[in-house]
Image (cartoon, rainbow, N blue to C red; front, side, top):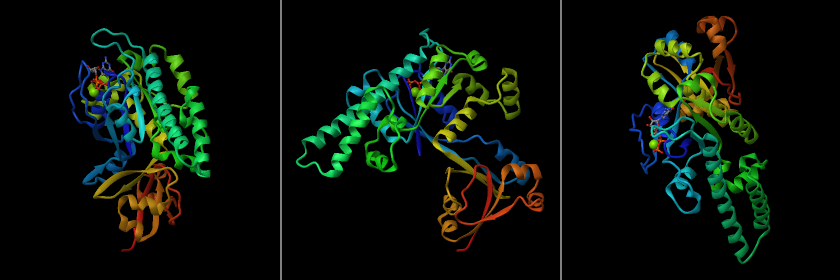
Length: 354
Ligand SMILES: Nc1nc2c(ncn2[C@@H]2O[C@H](COP(=O)(O)OP(=O)(O)OP(=O)(O)O)[C@@H](O)[C@H]2O)c(=O)[nH]1
Ligand SMILES: [Mg+2]
């Protein structure tokens, strides 16, 4: 699954891409760069640190999310074929990076306008797709029953879009969604708004038009995350102990990176399960609702095929017990079958047979 970082020029996309992926790509002052870049972002997870202390493994591997730094949107982009929309269609979810700090050239922040511009572009692009498909069906020789049904749905989508709604706000059946999955509608992709602010705003939580933006986000069902890109670049260079102290001094509990990871997981319906041993402590990303046998397949197809049982303990119970032996003694370690629905933070040992 690829998550696209999108936004107007100079909103801080590359800064945040670097923060998430540790890629060290050069940021620009004047915009530019026409190429999308893809990188892997390790997902911060304190449970891994705890397991590291317990097992002292050779290796610790965090879960990873793939992120794409998409070149800035220019106004009017939805009007013609262009790179931005093409690249945005390819990703599975979107993080809109919104500038809420004045630029180095002294341009004031207008995050509300940026949000409205982007929503409009995405909306117009979807309207365009709906329109083209409707025309194609209507001008076809024969309108089958199935196409008739599609036309009705397209009308429904058209009306929603025209009234400014996102398509992900419509209640569509699984069947309808399947019908539309080939279209790559942009407002059907899960969206997160990332407000990129200055140091002070990060501390206070206040930024221009914050109330209006919060209301809009709520109406549209979009999670809102505050982040201070430039500041966090500095924080990221400190060692973990200093990072915590720095955050404490600021009076915030988590970095924006951590908040973003949590919001992304929640909004995309993702959870992590953990595996732990002397060789490796590792987090794995799965969709909420994934069953044990399928989760085993994340690690290796052999483990899925030869699945016997999953030995599971909730991380919280393990942490409370202090060791696997104690957790076992407490009866916290369960044996689960292939249909067990995995929970976030399950520490798992799969038993299998090849
Ligand atoms: N003050 C402040 N400056 C920032 C912040 N985030 C990024 N910048 C600066 O804003 C400028 C643009 O940042 P980039 O990360 O290159 O922005 P971008 O969205 O990738 O820009 P384009 O790719 O050109 O569209 C750089 O000079 C950054 O250092 C922030 O949170 N606060
Ligand atoms: Mg950039």
